[in-house]
Length: 111
Image 1 (spheres, rainbow, N blue to C red):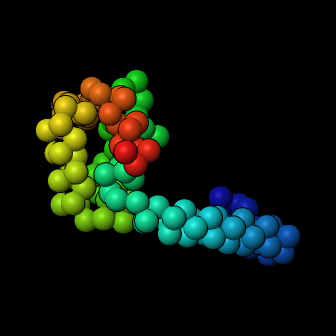
Image 2: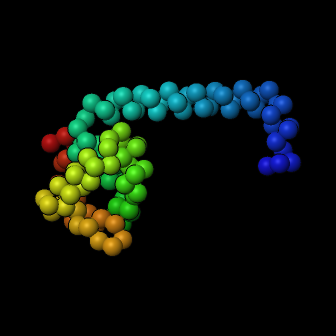
């Protein structure tokens, strides 16, 4: 990186491409964020769990998820606890096991 730093910072084509890429990404993120905020946290979290789970396990860090979903850490924990109480998720030492995939999918669809 140190060897290329000066060359990249003086390359107008590279900087233009980087600026366009980052601005398009920011616009897309803003659009998705505003669209997602219209849904209740339960729906957004169910979608997020389905998207990020691997082999039926959900292992994301709560602080990062709460930031990503735009809610407080406490609110996120409350909804996760509700999923556990309803038998949708089971808390384990490795994360959360998806016990009722059909119920999680229904929630993600807004039902």
